[in-house]
Image 1 (cartoon, rainbow, N blue to C red):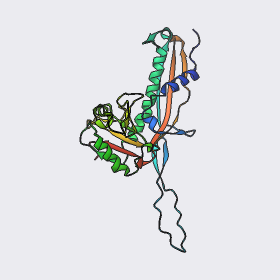
Image 2: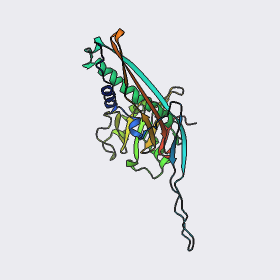
Image 3: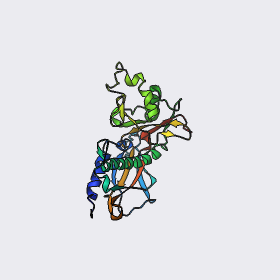
Image 4: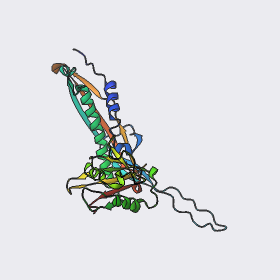
Length: 281
C-alpha cells in the first residue's frame, strides 16, 4: 500500500461532526467567529465587555438631554494552541471495537478532547467571575440556595429565557434527583422527564437547563464542587481549526494524523455569571 487512503478533508469533517452534541460549556458560550490571521499561541487578545446604559434622568426645561454611550471595558486573554496526533496501522483498518472501526473510535476521541480543551479554558475563566454565592455543603446545592443565588446575583432579571443554563458537577447532579423542586410533578415549574440525562442535560430548574459536566466543576485542592449559573451572551470563544494533516509512514505501514486547534475564551458579561460553591474567599 504505497499511498494513504485517508483524506485530510474527510477526517476533518468527521471530527467536526463528532463534536456536535458533545459540547456542554461550549453550547452555553457564543461563537464569536475565527481568530484573526497571523496570531500565535501566547499572544494576547482583547475581549470587549459592554456595560449597560445608566438610568433615565429628570428632563429640565431649557436644558439639553445628556447623551450617553455604552461604556466598554476590555479583558486581555491569552490565545491557546492545543494539538494531538494518532497513528492508524494498515492492519487496523478492518478491526472493530464495539461495532466501530478503530478509525471511528480514534476520531470520536479526537472530537472529545477538542471539546474538552476549549471547555477547560472556558471553565478556568468562569471560576474567576466576580459574582459569587456561598453554599453550606461542598457537594450539595439545594433549591433554596439556587433561588437565593439567582435573586442575589440578578435581582428581578430572572426571566427563564435570559439564561443559557446551570452547570453542575456529577456529584451535585445526584442531589438534584432527590430534590422535590426538580422531580416532583406537583411543582408547576417541574418539567416531565427531569432526571433523564440527554446530551449532558439532566433536566430544567425553573425552566433553566441544568447541564452535568465534570470539566472544571470540582476543586481538588478544596474537595468541593463548583456550580455556575450562566446567562445568554455572558460567555464566548474564538477559534481556528484547520484541516488535519496526514503523513504516510511506509516503513511502519501506517498513517499519522495530526490535529491542532487555536482558540481564546472569556467571560463577556461579568454580570451574567454567578459562581456557587462552599468557599468563595
